[in-house]
Amino acid sequence: MTGAGAPPARAGGAGELAGWAAALSAVLIWAGWMVATRGTLRGHGGAIAVPDIVALRFALAGLMTLPAAGSSIRPLLRIGPKRALVGAAAGGFSFSLCNTAGLLFAPAAHGGALTPTLGAVFTSCLAALVLGERLSRLRLAGLGLILSGGVWLVGGAFAAAQPPGIFIGHLLFAGAALQWSIYTIIVRGARLGPVEALVLCSVGSAVLYLPAWLVLRGPQQLLAVPWTVLLVQALLHGALSQVISVVLFNFGVARLGAARAALCGALVPALAALGATLFLHEPPRPAELPGLAAVTIGVWLASRRTSTRAARAMPPGT
Picture 1 (cartoon, rainbow, N blue to C red):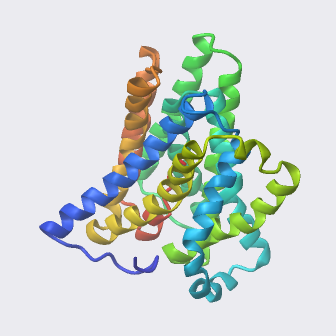
Picture 2: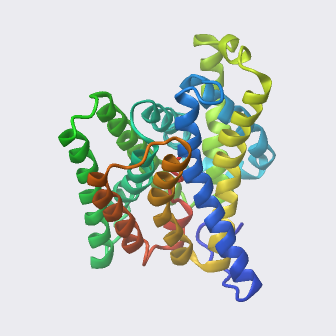
């Protein structure tokens, strides 16, 4: 993986095909995480509580990224302790708590349509306000479509008299998206590379969250879960979602360039909805389809002129 500000190594032939495969694999992991986590929280495959899922996630992800922590110390010192704490929480355990808990209340299709897409909206707005970035008309149009699609989804749930809890899920998804955007702005403002950014949220969250989890909750309920279920959940949340998907997406950026790799993110809402339909029997209602279409097209438009740094900080939606 190259640094956040380095130009992508464009490749043709087999290299370009590998880039598409890596970027699409990352997107499949992000969408699949939504579906699998919703199923886990509903009791399929052995239910695990949200705080315990997050503990599993960062116990394994922290161990996997710990070897890179030594070389990342100097760049991370540029952030300062306060921003480092905020960045580790907003990009790590606090984001994961919100995003995972949202799936207790709302369908996976809503999570796939709201968290990553609203993250793009919030990040663009904060980048304009804090970093002085200019938003093109095409990107503004895409962000407008994302917001319109999100409003359509929430309004459709209201019109269909969905249980009140679904709106708690929507609020949690929006909160997760806002936190990811704050993390992204901190990473971009400090010019961290992808490895340092991953160390910040993974190792940082392990250091901050796991001691508090041990004191306030303890591992008793987690240890009562069959070890096979624990292994699957640890690999899903810690290895695949937190680490491997990020490595794959950055590889895609290096082979395809930032803009083309970022376009793959437009597939997350549709793939999450498809997975929820096939595996959870939670198909989107017909009234929700225009909203899903709007956020998908919006992400595609907003990603057309995405910078390299922005693309590498794309929210995984997990």
